[in-house]
Image (cartoon, rainbow, N blue to C red):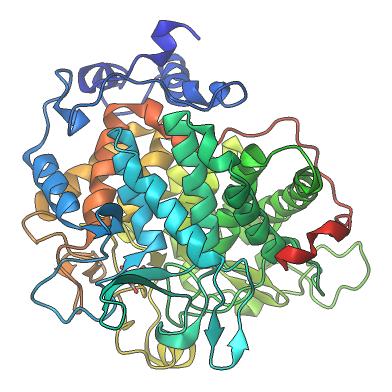
Length: 540
Ligand code: GLC
């Protein structure tokens, strides 16, 4: 790779590639993307992203004049670090002294992801390695909810350090959903764990961690859970409500986009990390089979744009046989009215859920950004998602980037779908609330699609308020301008999400640790996957 390809794209340089209306010229767009994607091509030979030396924070480099919020954010992030026996093992969810801690005094797996990325970008890798090993250790332990034993592969939602008076020392205690609201196991944790293991490997070039037999077994145990055969007729993963970032009842049960996109990301990362030996080979084959069917299914049936909406609007029902156009028997009368106004002529997105006679047309930010990052969407679809964000900026971003989900449920729908949840009221929390943590995902999607101007616009909004408001967990309201009703302050992933977005925009080569280029060699295979390897019994 030439030096020019691997040089970081600084602030001044990235400004130069924009036209007066903030868009990139085609040739410049290609150059920007190749800078951002340059690191992908190294994956095959060497996953390390070589970078310049480590100042703390790295944003102190001369090509970049750090925003005062950056220094504050680093200070806050460091204060949130949790130590166990003298070693840094993660970051606490929120350091808000004013509110009841509830479960915010724990290290959540999903919450630690942006913290980990910020540390990796800053060449502080030890905390990430310790976190990966500690959570792996929990996975191996026996977990029970009442008298039911959970599957071996399940990763914890969170863990905390507790003083054990009998032993006279600190111990780590994990939660697999048994103390969480709704008692749901976190399906996303295992996927985030694989994602982070790859990010660590890519950022450090240290293969020794992912190649450890314990880590290889950890990956296989997660895969065994989600690749196990059952009664499925779809390649998507069937999930309970509340099994991811949206961890309370919000009507996402079934095949939620939030999990399907992470599933694709985890499968693709596992593919890179697995050793091609023993049953590793069989897992790789299973991943290949599942991925091609899954990506085909998602691109075909979850994709919605103006044209597809019009097709669904005109769907015929009661079609039997394999020539059916309306495969899931979606009744056009079930299309919600809001979608006709919301859908722009330019743009599209992956809808929230697809199952028999049910399409959840809601927009989910994490799933759509993640779909871009793992190339679940085609290049055209990725561009269309960014177009939609621009076209529907006020709805999806408003005053604070960005809404986890759109639109909010109200009145009867809210009662039925959320079970009258007082935290998830109209335009609050998961129900149309705005989550600053999503800035990192939005920025990464912008960088990958060559649309940094969108991320810059979002960052400017965040910089007006986030620090002044005390780094809230979420904002409320249709425009996202009220600090959330029950929002924690000093929420670590709001802080880390901002830092990751900021660093990524300054040096797009960081994208390599959190995104994957499309695998052009993958053939769409529509046949059923081969059966699970017989040797895998210990894992499931
Ligand atoms: C809330 C969020 C969840 C997050 C947790 C800790 O429960 O819904 O996604 O992991 O807080 O911040």
